[in-house]
Amino acid sequence: MPDLRRKRLVLLATGGTIAGAQSETQAGRYTAGSLNADDLIAAVPGLAALADLSCEQVASVGSQNMTHAVWALLAARTTALLADPDIDGVVITHGTDTLEETAYFLSLALPWSKPVVLVGAMRPATAMSADGPANLYQAVALAATEIVARFGPVVLMNDEIHAAQGVQKMASSGVAAFASPNGARLGVVAGVQPIWAPHVAPALDAAFTPTAARFDVRQHPAHTWPRVEIVYSHADAQGDAVDEAAVRSQGIVLAGVGGGYATDALMAGMARAVARGVVVVRATRTGSGFVARNIEVDDDAMGFVAAGWLNPAKARILLMLCLLAGHPPQFIQDAFLRA
Ligand code: SIN
Image 1 (tube, helix red, strand yellow):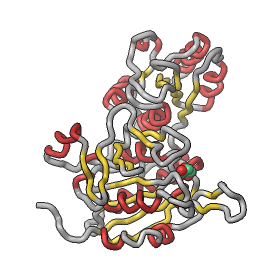
Image 2 (image 1 turned 90 degrees about the vertical axis):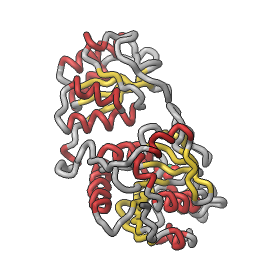
Image 3 (image 1 turned 30 degrees about the vertical axis):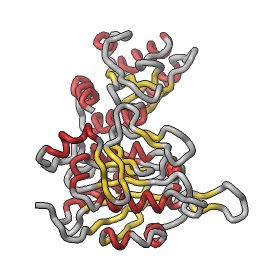
């Protein structure tokens, strides 16, 4: 039986352009995270008709400055809210630059039990034709539907609903900056109504069983999370970039060319890193596509992990959480192939 009472949602604000204010003196300039959560809600009067909404300010940062400490706060607070029988869902406002990373982290660190919708904006709140109010309005409408919970934390941008695993910021400008390049968006929101894509019909038809977090980070302060660095491959890349990263990291993700490849010199550096006990994951810098094991590189012999569908930024997160959980390399490879 669907629950027909008015939904009670909590908005957790973290900053970003959605809370950005334009400079009154310098055309085109703005500061992300200038407005607080109450200002955001006040800018969208229709919200009150959608749900009972309370708000909390978790951070006020441009998301280029997003930190593991803020992620730890978000994971702890959202988990507590989801466990509260008086709360039906959570909306998180966030800058767009690392929105996909926070969404993916939360998809691994939260239980999938009630709606969690992340939302941002490409234009500051004070811009002409700001996209934030419409995005926030639709995010709240979406969080008020019970059904979205089965997809874990999702991202709502520009009328579109994206899964955390697949969503990516594809452009540095324009309101249509987000896509799911390895698959399709989950659906769109028309007005306040989610319209689901045909490929998610089986998930909608299946019985929904809430699941526990895959990685519960709450007992681990953020400063104890393993360090994982991303090394970018390019023409004539040398191995010393990996050697330097290997000294200070427990994990390295290669943002490789093509199917996760690099110069012989960089590959040799990665082999040296593995020999030091660093876990090395091969991902692709191309923006989409799958990185498979043992195609042009003998991963079995080299001890590398293939990133599968995850882009380098998301591969960094999964590797960090696997290392935090103490998983061995074979388990880590399985985790990537299932991601
Ligand atoms: C940010 O990520 O905080 C700035 C850019 C944006 O939100 O669009």
